[in-house]
Image (cartoon, rainbow, N blue to C red; front, side, top):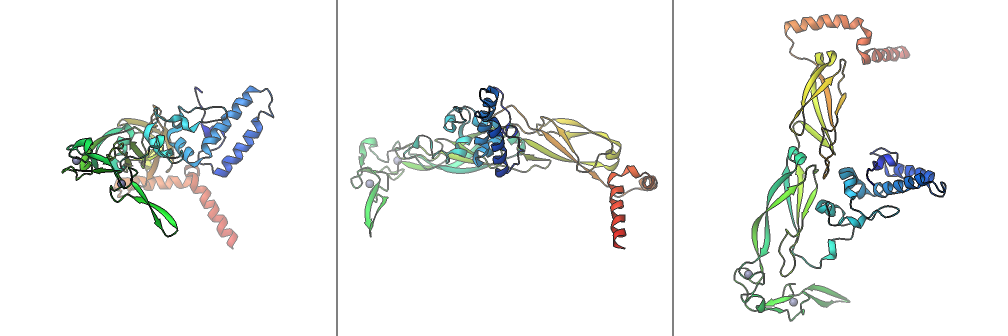
Length: 378
Ligand SMILES: [Zn+2]
Ligand SMILES: [Zn+2]
């Protein structure tokens, strides 16, 4: 699969297609290219596979969301056996944590089913739209429990030798108790769930093996990240007593921008035009999210709300060199606070405009409808 067609194109639907319509289109195409109907036709067979692959992703809300955000990159490294996708195949590899976080639940929890770890930590970072565009490294401060240095995390003054298996729970950390008809499990009251007892507890951590500490963690935020994405930093959470540290989750917020609005990989920018510029046509210079400027030709007779596309001047697509587009939406402004000369010119212009019916495309149609409206009333 060197080049891949867009999944929406494969299924001949738009990006905003509803689940029902998607299914309908899929069925129609699957029927058309089904191998039973096209015996020996290799092209039809390939097409059939492609359709199924695309539908496998788009029919699933989570996968579709990932595809919308990251494109095919979201699924690279998968097994891709016949009939579609091995969704478990992407572990390790380039996609990393964001992806794992998105699909962790779906795939039945954590990688490797770790038995116990220290607690996970959640934190939050706000970045600017420019930083989201270029990617940025942010230092986040987290208050976390780390292994106690005095006792090397054992909780004991005598080091590991002073730690015994808890006699009450035999190291399980949990005890069972009868409660009415039920047997319930609760944390062991002797060892508070650690499964161990310490004869001579460490003074710094009172036997816990961990102490609270503020830590600074460098978070590499990739270019193209979207508002609300969570990044997981494996092992950067709280230290556990004798178990691996938990994870750190960093929620990324992208603050609003004074010029640009973002939608996926596309960037929108509203630009005001003077009435004369719009009527006569002009060339304007607009800012681009990458810090450069671009020139846009505005043709004569441009109306409010018209869009101009600047291909490839949009947002970077996550973990890819591709870029979305930038759309300039123009608003034609009515001049205010006219000086004497402007007023004279416009008054003259108005006289002329009344005779030039083609000059105002909406105008003549609208007043024709108004005439009809009153004629039908009488
Ligand atoms: Zn200690
Ligand atoms: Zn115990």
